[in-house]
Image 1 (cartoon, rainbow, N blue to C red):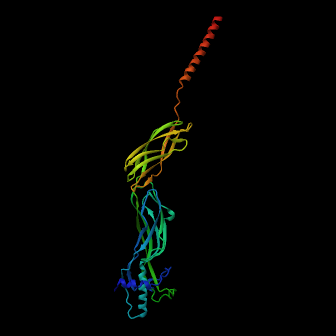
Image 2: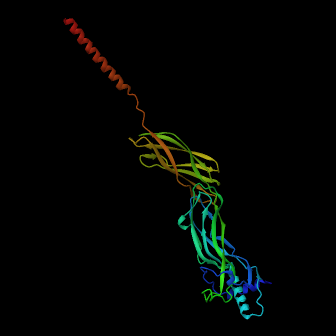
Image 3: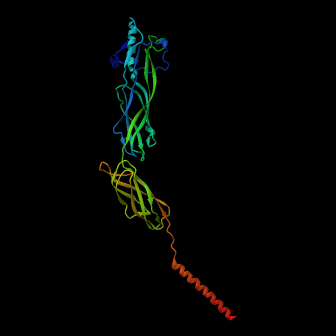
Length: 351
């Protein structure tokens, strides 16, 4: 017969503690099965707090596992007749059967499906000895994740591979425990291993995002030049009242370090022109200067972009031809030629 689920749940409060798993469980000929129960653990995962994150953010993800497993049926497999001993054994087994929804030896690990979300390996795996139905763990599992600066906005699914085992059957020893050398063993448990994967969705917030997409102009050592820097909004939201700023360090300097760009829609570009000087004797090579953009976001708050690097080539100054020097040199050569000719003439006349 099928025993009502309400009856099975009523036994949970009186369930004795689960015995440790036997190293060598008794064989079937030394055990009897009075009932077959139906049901198993049902594990789900939820995240505490906000699941929305920003690009470039490093955050702690707190995940809580919950067990919603229920016993949805119990069937009698063996009659006990008028035997009081068998009747008592059957009632004891019925109590043990209600424990099949407990998950034992849980192992959980967080895995990212994209290389733009990194899971700290030191926090990527956790274990729980047991997870009882309706009882939350004392502490959540904490995973540290880092989002790339270049990750597009949207919903991303993190995977949580989960392994555990549960008691899938209970068999009573029917008084044979002394023969087995285990006088205190009144039952044996059969366990089933489960491997499953849960999903943890997180959201990357949309925002304006800037990149330096073009740089024109050349600097000369010891001189001043004009550099045009093009910024593109590669993000999803509009940046209002954008102002570009550069930070030039020695041996470079900027006459004015900020330029207004106005409102920049997603996909639009703006060019800022900076006048940059270099010290005399500055080595010719590529120099990098930092840049950022301050703007007003969708909430009306002042926001700064991530730092961007601008590469500027610096060249040696071209050597100008000294006309005066060449003229003086030419006159000097002419004078020498005239002197030599005059000496030769005088020597000829003397002969």
